[in-house]
Structure formats: structure tokens, C-alpha cells
Length: 405
Image (cartoon, rainbow, N blue to C red; front, side, top):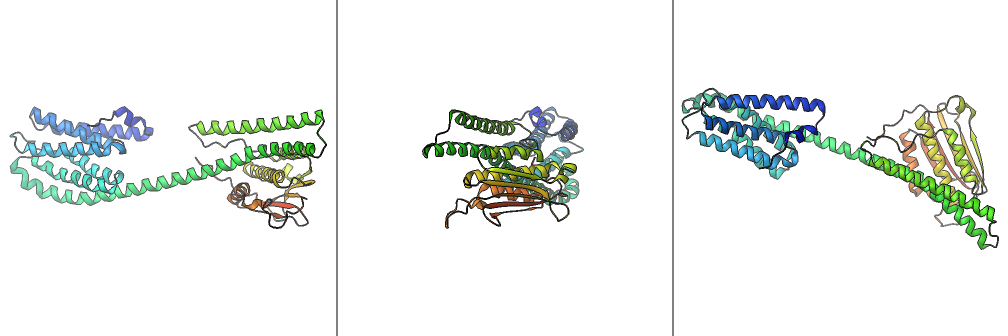
């Protein structure tokens, strides 16, 4: 027989549920003990208490232990009921109402937790064990007891089954919601990983390519220029390592509801512009002065930072020949809308190439999901004159989306 310590069972429950469970268990044990004493025969009293404890243990057992524990309780209850028919000492007032209630609740638990191939035999056996308790009464009480108890037990069978099916549906719904939250969380972490690490790794790759290119054409960098490039590479690698360490630390925490880093404000765009400017192209950053007087909410500012960072990362990857990059963040002529535009002047790619088709990349896909979650829109494609352009429009009035818990 499998035994489950009561402390281990109650410790995993919420405080309110724990108090209710302890109170209900205490009342059930008290009722079982009182009915056992009613037999007036010590062996029957001890057996009734033991069977009652088994039934209560089956109700408290975790779902993975329900099958063996419930069968032990049902078998013991049936065995005691049949054995009592051969005894002279019978309970005169009740055959075991508390035990009857626990057996009916086992019907509900089996329907709720067990698969169909186990549910049917276990629920049927638990229900059949309930009317067998009437055999513990004196033979003269059979007719009267059956007259009132059997209809109630017949009605209880479908009621407890429906209750179990309802709880099973609730469990399935909660599990689907949990899976959906975990899926959203994985998408969020994937976007953050792409934004944090991809940005810095792309900066490292771009600077290494620049050094190799200048060396290959016969113009190796001076020691000072090489030292500056290596310092920039070291700084980008350090930031990428810090980002990875922050993500790993977050995944190790029991509570994963916090974002991977604090929301970045619009002023952090200057650092992004300076980071790209250090690799070669001239970068201009324009922020609407009205945003300084009335800055957007943190989640809007964070989305702006992600959009600009991903656009600059794609320029490093796919537009190494770009000479100028323009970043424009301003209020749209449409009231309550913020427009973000990042444009470069790189030459268009050769016909048939896909090196600049970044719309299929994970970064743009993640940005589009992020912007759509805020009620906005994002487009990425050839610029009006030349180069490539990423344009996003975000309503300032949109509330912050709930973070997966």
C-alpha cells in the first residue's frame, strides 16, 4: 500500500486551501471514529477506523497516487462490508455515512484525474462500495434502509460523475491557458535573446569584417585604429555576455514574471546611434521635442528602443555599404500616434538576391508581433528614394500588455 505523508500533501497547497482541507479532514476523521464506536465491538471499530483512514487518504492522495490508493480503500471497504454480514455485532444507528460520502467523492476524483481505461472501473467500484455499506446494518434494518438510501445513491452516481467531468474540464482549460502563457513567454525570451545578443554579435562581426577588408585591399589599420576596433569588439562581447548572464539568471528564478531588463527610454537611442556611428556610417537621430515634454509610457519607449535596435542591427548585417542612416522618432499627424522611421541609403541588392529580404527574418517577425501587440503596425521594405526603410506606427494610448507569468 502506498502511504503519503499528510505534511507533504498539505504543504503543496495554498494557505486558504490548506486550512479548509485540514478542517474537512478533521471533521471526516471525527465522524468516522464516532460511527466506528457505534458498533460496540472492538475489532469492528478498529477495522472501520482503518477503512475510513484509507478512504480519506485516497481523497488526499496526489493524482499520480490516486489509482493504487483508491483501489486499496474501495477493496477494504467492500471487504469489511461483506465480512460484517458474518458478525453478530452490527452498528445500530448508521452503517457509515462518512465513509459513504468519501466513496462518492472518490467517484468524482477518479472521473476528474484518471484516463478513461482507469476511470470506468475505479468509479464503478467506488460507487458499488457505497450501497454495500448497508450490509453492515442488522438484517432487520435492510428493508427500511434500502427504501430511503438506494434512491439517494442511485441519484448520487450521475451527480458525482458530472461534477468530476466539470472539474476535469476546468483542469484541461487551466492547462491550455498555462501552455499558452508558456508559449508567449518563450516567444518573449526569443525576441529578447535576438535583440540583446544579436545586436552585439552583429557589431562584433561588422567590425571584424571592416578590419579584414581594409587589410585585404592593402590599407591595414594603424596600431591606434586597430586598438580602438579591438576595444569596441571587447565592449560588444562584454555586453553580449552580460545579456546572456541576465537571461540565464532570470530563467533560474522561480518567479519569471519580471522582464529581462528595465525598459529603455528614448534617451537610450543616442547610445544605439553612437554604436552604429562608430562602425562607419554617418547616423542622424531626430527625436520630436514634444516627446521630451510628454514622454511616452515605458512600454511604448521600450518598443521604440527595440525597433531602432533591430533596424540598426539589420543595417550592420545587410547594408555594410550604407553611408548615411537616419533615425526619426516623432508624433504623427494622426493624433495620438508615434511614428518611428529608420532609413539607410545603401544600394539595392542585385536582382534575385535575398540578402536584404529581412522581412522573413526572426528579428522583423518579432518586432511585428511586438508592435501588433501594442495596436500598431510595422513595415519594412525599399525606401522611397533608395536604400531600406523600417517604419512603425504605435498608438500612444494603448495600455501595457500583460507580461506572461
